[in-house]
Image (cartoon, rainbow over all chains, first blue to last red; front, side):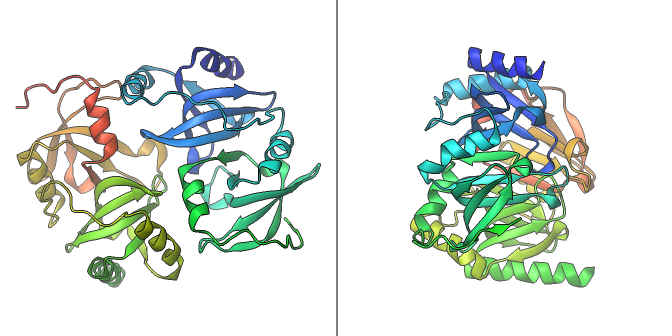
Length: 189
Length: 190
């Protein structure tokens, strides 16, 4: 039923709210732009701010809301010219591994997130994908000071969300240190 | 606990005096972090020009007792540089917002007919939190009487919200302005 509702939202171009069980990002608001076997891509918004794209696991979606508030928001979005935009690049939504493999050549700064029901247990990686294996995605991540840390291998099974081309990523990238030439050893996690 | 609040107040005032970008960590899981410039500090409240990432998000009034930490130093240096280079400087709100008490702040909003978002946050977060967007009709010693707009853009009957439960106000935010632009016309306020 969830999958059908998501597919219906994609086909109709409706503004929807996906509810998930993660305290730090319980709701995803926006337009469904693509759907795969395991993942869904949403052109997401924070309030009326275009927040780029998010890829989440369909199994984590508890509800697809398109009731009264969403319809009012559709009027707001139409009035403000906030139309859905397709993904900025091809992303294979068959699985998280497939998605990361398709994103890796792009070399863009992105969020790789491992969310948990308790937000204190979340792990967030902002960086560039450097490798994808059968079990892990390896991220060269930026710290809060804009400096590059050694690569970290993140278990694919833990990854719940990817964020692409968000204003935060684009702005952060502008002021971060240049990407280092050496890759360094991966730190298994 | 009184000492903790005094320390937080002092840190907020230092951030205000220096014009520093500050990250405020709060006790509420719904929105544990507020990022921005501290514009004013009273005994109980702080007025902050807030940002969502690098986006100007208007102004918020917060209770000092709900703030656990004020971060303004080296970790913020990177963000402070990004803010400076993008011209994201502190700005005063479009109206004077006195912050001696929540009641005073709300009375000022009523006088200026400025809509507001009123939040009653909780330690549990989620559905336990209360969030109302609307117009201030009256402020008594104990309550604000707010005419809310529901999520579908319709004005609903006036509700009384206990002042002691209010943890946060949002004033002149882009969300507030845009939401009301497409809502029903406001009714006559009594």
